[in-house]
Image (tube, rainbow, N blue to C red; front, side, top):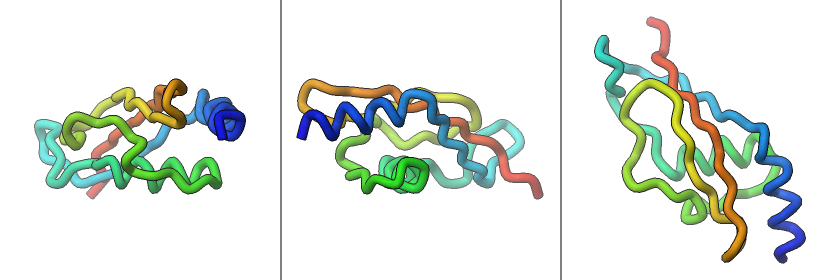
Length: 90
């Protein structure tokens, strides 16, 4: 299991997840980007099903910009995933 997690970690090193969402003029999102959203997009990028409980996120992301989110792939194996939130063009 740890070998699979290490292989997944290698595939996640250079990934940046891009979310285009509705936002107000000040850069605040009308909604938020949650652990489930990040897990789903990460799964699409890697081809692996990612459990949203493995995404470490204190609160949903609610502002436009870049963030780093931690993913726990194994009890002692964590990866940092870059997240970019952009305002959707209207």
